[in-house]
Image 1: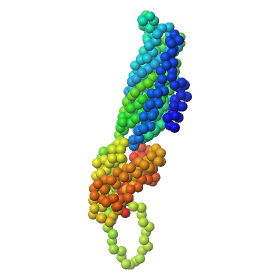
Image 2: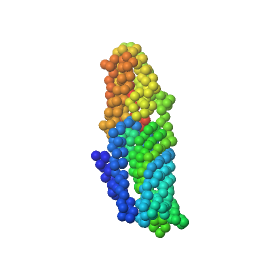
Image 3: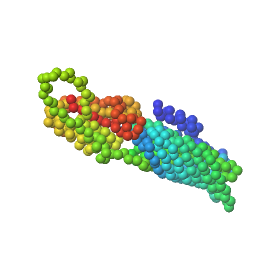
Image 4: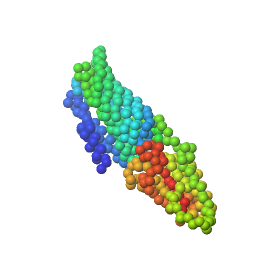
Amino acid sequence: MVQVSFIEVVDRLYGQNNFIVGANMNIKRISLYPSVASIISLSLLMSPQVNAAAENAGEFYLGAKTGWSNFDFSQNDGDIDDDAWAGSVYGGYQFNEWFSLEGGYNYLGNSKEHIAGSEVNKTQIQNGEVGAKLDWNLTSAWNLFGKVGTSYNYVDQKTGAYNDSDENWSLMLGAGVEYQLSHNWRIRSEYQWFDNVGENSTTGRSDVNYLSLGLSYYFGSSDNGAAATAAAATTAAVVATQEPEPEPVVEPAPPADPIPAVTLSKGAFEHDSTELTPEAKSSLDQVVTHLKESPETRVDVIGYTDSTGSAEYNQKLSEKRAQSASDYLESQGIEESRITTIGKGEEDPIADNSTAEGREHNRRVEVLYE
């Protein structure tokens, strides 16, 4: 259902699936539809553990991309070589998990016209663009995006011994897919359309189609190392019981909520994995020691997530990460019968899910003594 819905949106934004380039009634059809559909189908098969757009909220980024451009000039007299290599640099700021402001420079290459085997016209296009980038998270690390904005174009045309040039503004629309390699790196595949580049009175007008592959770097930190260890290794003191005094008789206070023996938070798991990090295992070793010294004590191992993604997905993720902690306790000699493993998904948040810091605290596993 997601794939069909997206294709309908692409059709409405860009019209037909194929764009047509005319030269002396010879029509060349170039289809972008299969490429976009293949990228989307591949993305729906992947399911890592970290939401890319949410994780990079509040960060600047820079990137570069390269690919193929195609021109659709309205007037020509000879054979047109309208495919060209193109390259770009870009940068932006990710305001939140769904909105970024992005700008860049595009070198869109040259269109060449030949008559009787001789080059009679060469048109080069460059532009600068700025626009809004809107993200839609498919899974935890894959997201689709759309772009809308404007470009300022410079067109330089050489016809024989004559040179013409002009500048104008155009509408820019785009769509693509991104995958997060790590906290700092993403790859993207992107299609852009620039409307009516150039002026009819000088160089002529052309729609420009641009398909590219790029790499982005985000200037932020995942704070994995020592900071994560400090957040994960909160250990409660074991309070020794004392013999109650016979007098006076005091009504017992209602039992307090148990204090977690250990809380495994950010940095407790490898990126895009449910495998425990060495820091998380070190925190659990304290629990192993206490359980071996107190053979009657049992533990509850409870997994939680933040509110990003669907409730069903978060429930399964919390169960898998809690099970990883339970498996480690068993591997250190603690009987399975003394461990209860529970997944609570996005329930019982301990911090604000609207901030990146809050979501990191809510993605946790708690170990409670019984």
